[in-house]
Length: 134
Ligand code: THU
Image (cartoon, rainbow, N blue to C red):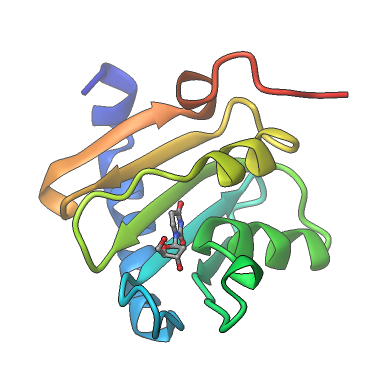
């Protein structure tokens, strides 16, 4: 945990709680692995998202992309941080979500962990070094 994390610990905790709060809305009848995400915009708005699975497995969308798409379609494009919670402990964003978020926010702060007492902070660039951008 660095200094910046300590300074913003309460805010990151609240964002993580917002991600946890939507876990019951996840539609995960196949994996039974519920994921919730909360994306904070630079304007201070929070968009949440859950994973939504599909009988045609490839049609599944992750919680992180759900949150991002919700924000984008409401006109928000500048993101500061995302928190990720799951029903199965610490959940790191998948490769597709890392690349998807990188398009809009390479410097995004990523908050995740087992529970609110054990949060970790990364930057998206740490999780996706040399991300692709046209
Ligand atoms: N999942 C997410 O929602 N986010 C991730 O970053 C990793 C995976 C979902 C997709 C699928 O519904 C379930 O977790 C199991 O892979």
